[in-house]
Length: 195
Image 1: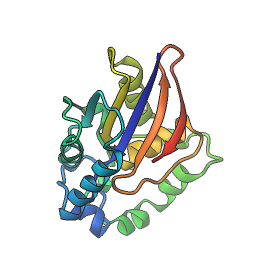
Image 2: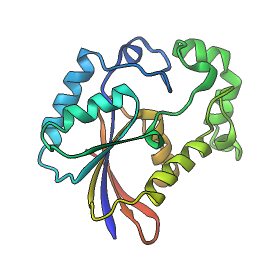
Image 3: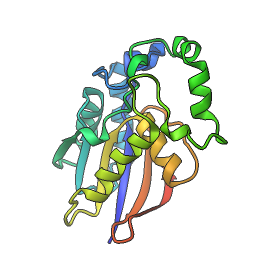
Image 4: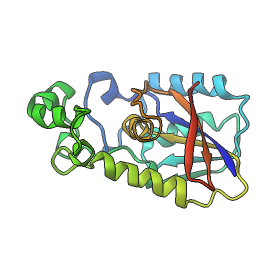
C-alpha cells in the first residue's frame, strides 16, 4: 500500500535564532516559531490528513498542535521522531562547535569517507543510528488504514531522511514541509517534494 507522508520541521526557537545547537534539549517555540506554524497551517490546510505523529520535544509538539487546529486529528507522540542527539555539542554556539569539532565534522561531511555515517560528536548519535530510528518508525509502525500522515519533527532528522532515501541532503528551514510516499510492501520511499 502507498502512504503519503508530510514531514515538517518545527517552528523557530530562541536557540535557532541565536545559533545554538539544540539536539535533545527541550527548547520551546518562540513567537516567530508560533507564527511560522500558523502560516504553514494555512498553507497546507487543504491537504487530507488522517493522523499526526510528533516528536516528543516541546517545539515539535507545539508546531503539531498549531497545525492540527485545521485538521482536528489525533496527535501521537514518539521518541523515534526526536531530533538527532548532538551529545557534547548541545547548548553550545554553532561556530564554537565548528571550531571544537572541526576535524570530526569534516570527516562526517566528506562524501568520499565511507565511514562518515558511523561518526558522531562525542556522546552523540551517528547518522546511521538516526536512520535506524527513522526505519523503525516508517517500517515497523502500524499505520493501519491511515493513508495521509503528518509528522512533526526536526531539521537534522529530516536531513538524514533525505540523505539516505533521496540521495541528496536537504537543509530544512523552520516550518518547511516535505512530502514523500512510502510503499509499505516494498519498504521504498519515493516522490520527494518540498511544499
